Image (cartoon, rainbow, N blue to C red; front, side, top):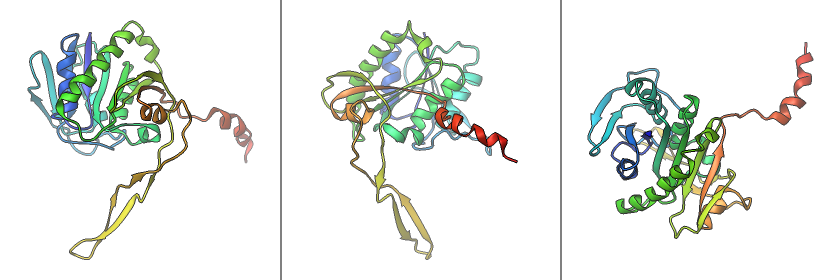
Length: 253
């Protein structure tokens, strides 16, 4: 099995290094990841500047490159250029530092990298761990859940022909696995206005998560309750209900 691994935390992030090393015992591992952190870049790609490529050493039997581009660039370059002569069977984005739950998937470079895999007709999974302060050893343990998932999916990868799996692992004792829907995530105090030493106004985007009532089968609920959430996420964004209701507008003159 040939697996392409990427992330948005950067090539030297503990999550991607430990995942690549753990998976190298069961598959041929190829890594293309940003040279530095590119979190919250969504599905942006680099078209106005060159993308620099540098081979790096992540361990024995792992072919790895750091690039100056975005997470989506990493998957595109990996599949269509660096490893174009290799049949990539699966794309894994992660393990991300911090969760990617609910509507946050829109901003996530981790999830967008998996989506790029889907665009390129490759089964793809995004994996995140629900903690920002993580010791490296934790990622070794978390990688075992990824192995379990792959082993259960390897003969069913055709299920991922029209969606990715967005997987979030709780930072508590895992009770089990649940298939979930995207929840709703919003923030308060998002913009902080400041003034530079030169008198210019600037803003920091941040804020804290709002406590919202969630559906019982949402990814947010399940992770908060100690379950690993598996959410099938599609690239199809058309609201089919409104599509039919708006058909009458075709008669506008």
